[in-house]
Length: 302
Image 1 (cartoon, rainbow, N blue to C red):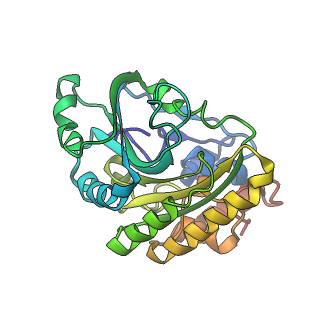
Image 2 (image 1 turned 60 degrees about the horizontal axis):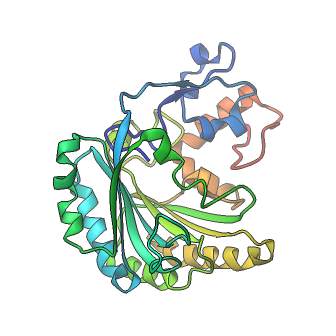
């Protein structure tokens, strides 16, 4: 999660090539994970270098009784935040391990994971308004960007049972806040969660037709995740996730983020790529007419 000024929807800009395809199909320049399963037999990723070595990470959490208040505050605050600041909202359970305080471990809370990529001297001032909320958990530290990207790896090791549902939302009305709070109270496992990732800053400076992903006019990527290490709880976390998504889907702006979707049908894939779907299907027909790469969120050859 990069600050908005550096963030091109989830990772650095990547350029994909298939032999000499870039010259003939400049539209192949799209986000890697959106394309590799469906568009390229061989892909080479060239990462744009970011002059960003260190970010200030600020984790805050509040009692779940304040969930509606904190989510409403976050909804309004993040829209006017400086581009050097980014933060995703979450309903979560405090992990049962250090460095989290013993009295908070396994408690359901709401919170925001912030990161600040501006001047270190300005970090305390930037987070002053956040601290006025008097969170029960309040920690800030400088952290290498690579460490931030892997900060939650230990919480979610390989082998956990996962079920995802995603939507893009342009607004979070009070009615949606109330529905969020209802499902946050019933998270079925301590690893289950809901995140809201802002769509703003650098991502909005790309046109909707410049990459595969079209939802660049603001709002949030909203993702519900049911997670548990025990296969016996697969249906439990999946049912919670689907019910949560169905309750919030009426507030969707259309489509989701394909990295955070299950096998939900072709209509959901089309909605996620929007007007770009037909163009991507033409590219798929050129490079994979037999639909060899058909897993994940498949774009069928035109």
